[in-house]
Length: 526
Ligand code: 5B6
Image 1 (cartoon, rainbow, N blue to C red):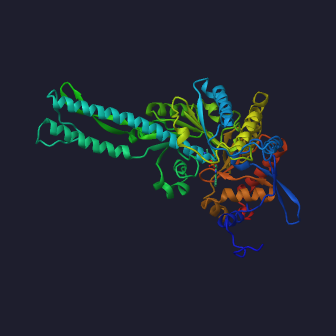
Image 2: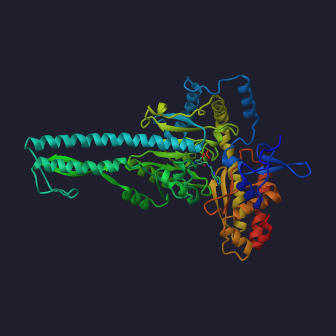
Image 3: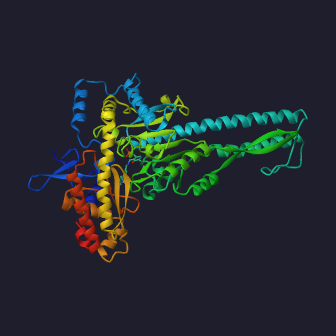
């Protein structure tokens, strides 16, 4: 059938042109473990070592045979896939395994977590945004009820002649009228100011260079200004904080503080007092900041963040979408730095590389049961994805957590090699970041390079992509840049990374370093 628009491009026109311009415009035809394949001009299948692995969503690689066999068997059994508003015990089975892992790695048995399912990471983050707002609204309702009761008590005291209205620093009162008029004037003005505050949305906290998704609310938690700023009017704002500056973190929280006005009767006098208003919705944290160049949180920062949340009373939301499911050598990366969350988000690898799965977990003490009915999604917790999630969890936990140990060991081996390359080329490599199979090699800034093509590529933020293009073209290895400046190259393969894969990777990186050292900008041009 001929195309109605005579060969028009309907999807990815700009994206594909751009990918081709940096040498990444290849269409892959097959994938297996850590290898992608494309078919070249001679019809030959060309293998490419994949270090991107779906932005870290393939802990068991592409098409793991056990996951594929499980998926086929599941479909052959004709299990019900979409049956919303029926009993779906597979949801509880997944939540039970996740709770057991949480208790083992982090909570030490401190309460259980309720699960709400989603189809993507950003959706799980937005579920947390919604739930945190439900919690905040409940706190506000409690506060306003108290304020309302106190206003009533003041009316009764003034009406009975047991109290007079004092001057106060918040609301200036007219001199005219008796005590009752003055009190009503005070209550009306306090009520007006309180209503203004109550109508406002929350402010969220997140770390500098955070990535929490790209949907309407979650993109406001993702610091990258190109992705966030055009949409600021659509959702609550975020205050981005530095994890290594506890004092600045506390100062920012103090600066955000807002107060509700309350009227109290004290010793026969009606006075106005300030009540702490819950402005902050939640604090979102990635234990390892993937998009920020694979930077793990320190234990000290994890402690400070927990302390801020406890002081403010807002939930600490640990986003394990990228770092979770074993990649760092533990199921929850936060367990390395003792980061204890009130909510958790998981996605990526829990889909086993073939399903779209995500889940948000809520500590039972904070969970609002009505949320189970308030929130829903047609596709979430469907029978097929849930069955894959259970299979992935079984594989991760098998042999006393062998997969976690392999991830840690393979990660250490790869990190050793990256560190050796970094120390051999200190003039072009800045640092190696990350933990387990969540690593990055950061190149030095080239915006003042001697070579003009290098300078230009660095200034336009394209250098990392051009490096990725070269590594693909000449070494048949797929890497992508990462980090705010795009100066780093990311490595997040599956646990099946072999020593030979690591050796090839080292060879390719040495080649890139040699090019940068020699300022051979032309070789980076496709
Ligand atoms: O499933 P979804 O993508 O909605 O998950 C959102 C999300 C991610 C994440 O890593 C965290 C911690 N929280 C929520 C998903 N990560 C996606 C990602 N995308 C890019 C780079 C990354 O490092 C991570 C990306 N970079 C450039 C262009 C497009 C995407």
